[in-house]
Amino acid sequence: MPKRVLDDWSRIVSLLEETTVGVLATCTEGEPWAVPMNFVYDREANRVYLHSGLKGRKLDNIRVNPKVMFLVYDPGRLARADKACNFGQRYQSVILTGQARVVSDQEEKSLALAKLVKKYAAGHNVPPVPESEIDSVAVIVIEVEDISGKENVDPPVRDA
Figure 1: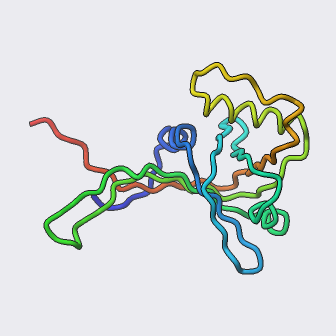
Figure 2: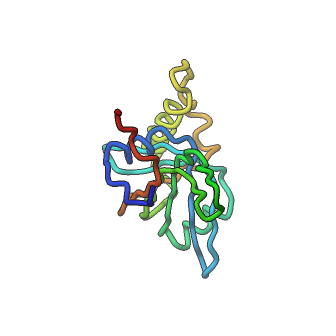
């Protein structure tokens, strides 16, 4: 199946809401940097929230150059074939571009952490991050400017 644009908005949102790890790409002074991160997509605000330690290269890069890219993907299966050139990887992916910033507002930071806890607790009763611990982590928000998707999936099975 040839690669094609993934333009099914419900599938794009599903990937953003259900995928547990994405890759944040930053760049400063011509040096790219990419790091896998846990995240939550806020559909209503069209934002991505990530949590981080208080120091690190990604934070330094964002402060210098807030333009970022964020990738999520479902790797699917490897499609083997009789010839090497016919092998393929089935996948669906979404790439976001936007402006990132470190959240300084305590209310926004607390809400973002609550969204992250809700996503990763997956129905388990986990209390929110205590106010006393909120300053021990950084929260990054990506204000999404563009979303694009791509896929290479198996064709639908037709009834005989």
